[in-house]
Length: 134
Image (cartoon, rainbow, N blue to C red; front, side, top):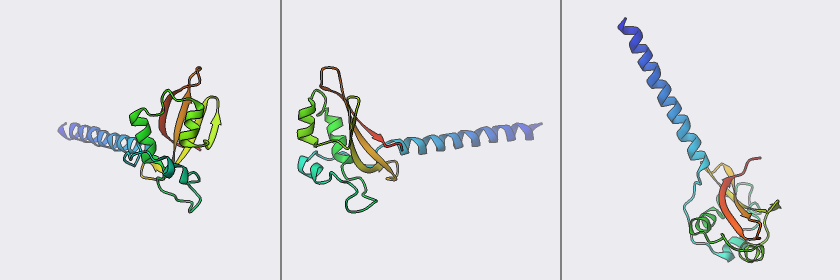
């Protein structure tokens, strides 16, 4: 019966397109929605309270965070050097500092964070951009 084969193939194609669309949306929600911009300590520190002006700040520090990550500027620095460069973190626990960036993930709907992790020798071992999960 050629009709059933056509329906099965059509259903398989539709399923493939649906799965691909879902995957594309998921990936886009995970990625930063901002381009890298040169890091500027003064601009970073001026925007410490990203929600001071409005509850919808946009992506205030995300471009600068990407610049730091892409250049590897934080890796190997000590706590003191990070505090001098970035100021006090918004959160700190278990050898990890967290800095709020604004709404920089996906389509700009989700808050994003710069995560700075330290190794046993008190030096930064990684820095990454991530979406904040409530």
